[in-house]
Image 1: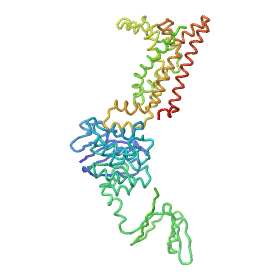
Image 2 (image 1 turned 30 degrees about the vertical axis):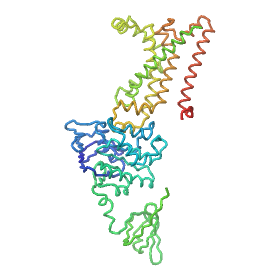
Image 3 (image 1 turned 180 degrees about the vertical axis):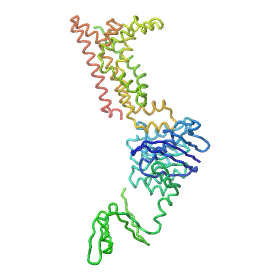
Image 4 (image 1 turned 135 degrees about the vertical axis):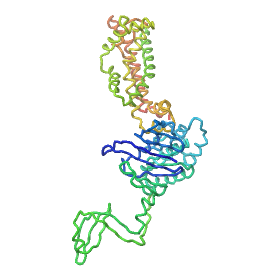
Length: 294
Length: 223
């Protein structure tokens, strides 16, 4: 069980913002922090790992108190021993993959855990290569393996897959899932990718301006509202044509342009540039798989 | 030919460089990490030898270390150390004179390492000391090499400071640059040319080696 109750004044792009979070995370769960840039997601991970100090509050992990402003407890990052995968991977460039993993070892740790990780993360072929010669996805696997070497109590993942293309991202989501099932680690994942969240997370916290806007299972947050078979899109009117019997309105929805047939009087209420809602009831929508070449 | 001034020059440069590594790394580390208000003051002091005429530095060293003054007198009476017109005085003056040449490259090297790399080491439970030794310094080898070589070469080329604080005592403080001046004064152009040519050749080779190594021109030899 991880108890997180933190307050912190942050400098955001729009001025100062107060991050105020109060969460309880069950052991072994994978939770996701979701929300736009600059709402304090990375800062939250930094405070859990001890790299940033909250202004007030408490951080308790199982029976240990890592931070308590009132009782002046603040463990150093060294003592907390979390597993942290940074957005830029932060691999040590002067060490090979194997040396990176060995460096992460605690003083009295044996080599067996490292050989297990190399096997799980399929790093056998890459052991003696330097990070500069690895692809993004390979670096990511090394960073994840390295974060797991010390068997941490919490695994913190800061948008680990954001910089990768969709095919590799898909494969690595599989790795994350395997790792989570294998080690039963309490994991906090920052992600912008709804598909990724639905696939991996037990619970989602949607953040806005430093506060929790919504929380729940990924299904309740992202899917429920769309289950009625109704398609709803917002768009912008580009062109209105009045034909003999009907009117034709051209609407731009994101990058697609569609034509919608309407009654004359409906068309006369619209002007070019208006924001409109395009709604359709589809009982049996068709799905076509898009092939992504790797 | 008298090799003594040349040997003394390189002995001085070697001592100075070794001391500078020992004190330069911690100062550069502090400067690259601190948010302290006195940082600009300290940075200015470190950089002063770049712009100040060496004679000014030498003059103040002479004043401070002179047994006629409080500090020099204290050194003399309590520690029995005489820094004026002695080799140890030369070493101390050279260390301060070459300080920016060691600190600047190391400081910019350390500042250039991405923050997440050092933080990654911290969350793995590694202390600041272990992180510096095993993560940060190995990544800035070119900067370290530049600092070492520039400090060494700069000390070899020193004249004004040495003349002021060391004087011209053969075997003790008469380094090659002073010897050249001395020989020219005495119209011994051959001797002056000998010292000059040796200094020219050696410093050229040292600098060339740095550019070759840092420009990775030797890569195919060890890869």
